[in-house]
Amino acid sequence: MKVFVTGHKGMLGTDLMNLLAEEKHDPTGADIDTLDICDLEAVMEAVGETKPDAVVNCAAYTNVDACETDADNAYRINAIGPKNLAIASNHYAVPLVHISTDYIFDGESDRPYLEGDFPNPQSVYGKSKLFGEENVRSLANRYFIFRTQWLYGKNGKNFVKTMLALAETSEYLTVVDDQSGSPTYTKDLAKVIVQLIGTRAYGTYHATNAGICTWHAFTKQIMELAGVDIEVRPCTTAEFPRPAKRPRYAPLENFNLKLCGFATPRPWQEALKDYLREEGR
Figure 1 (cartoon, rainbow, N blue to C red):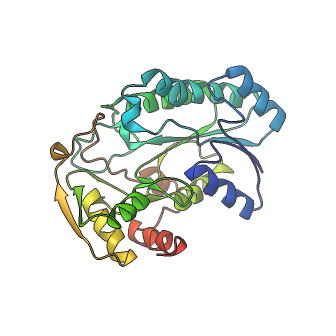
Figure 2 (spheres, rainbow, N blue to C red):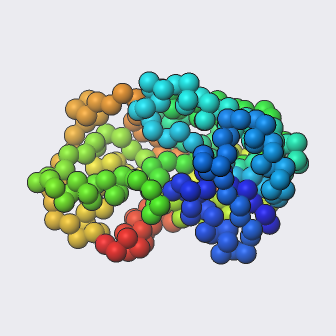
């Protein structure tokens, strides 16, 4: 299967490209230096020349706080980009895979979110990603939307690397303990995408590693597994204000994957252990 991946140099895109190659698919990638997904003519030309069997959009504006003051670019990349890819995918009669986020929800739930729960984004990032989802649904006849959260991986900046770096220069760490989600390893998300991409089980899916924790609990587990002896102090979101509002409680239940009989990602603790081992920790 020939697969065209946008954002292929990013954290998820790199792992996806590697896994596709390992699984004997034929991945071709494009990134911002070779393709502007906000340019419809360029997207049409790229998909037409590549002649893929599927398109995967890993490109996104993911700086949540920067989106608050750079809304135009957030909407261009997170909403218009997916719109263009949906138009091109439909024109060439191939399915589109699009990556979305827990930020489309308000985080005020008392249980993990299901795919059919009502979205209510509270930030520019979340609103732009929801707009992207809506564009894909309305313009692509065949699509997979994968919502995920708290991504980390070897090929890019992430929370795990940041915390380990801070631990080298700090007496203690202070981390938010009133936001909950599911840390998700990009290699495990890539496996879900590859598992479904050759099927006709189109639709919207939640895809995260199993289990729920706070950022504080996640950090403590990182330090324990990495063998770093440092105090990790809890704090509230109010004590650590950021420009963009974060969902308070937004774990994603992998309901549709289970319902359709697909394998779901392993517990986040197991994934983190493998990631740290690969990082030499």
